[in-house]
Length: 130
Image (tube, rainbow, N blue to C red; front, side):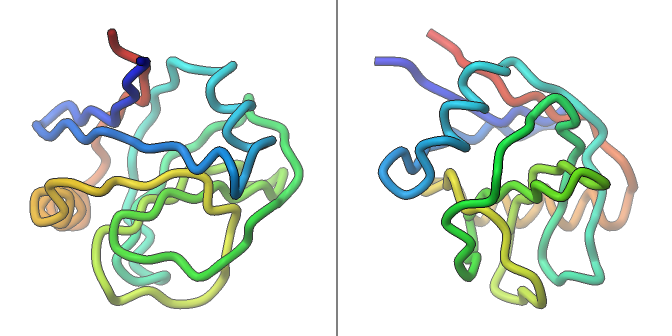
């Protein structure tokens, strides 16, 4: 079975579980586009969220529901096209296409989010591993 992860350059590897039943088109678009990488930035205006650009992903919004700690969503707005990762319970504002989640090591995910907030941009890799 394939395994997918988010890996951060300053430490932290998190297994990603795709929500294929809830967002099939978004999941298919991401699986076809992997591996992806980009500069991860804090979205402090949105609460406990960081994001990275995914300009090659073109998919209509689906499964726009409230995010939660460990949720991974896609902002399909052509001006943004970003992967949004929620690392805590303080979440504000807009709902995007929830297509994946991180279920384990959520305390470590929060540490990564706080590190990105305090230290600035960090490279992230979204990839399939064997």
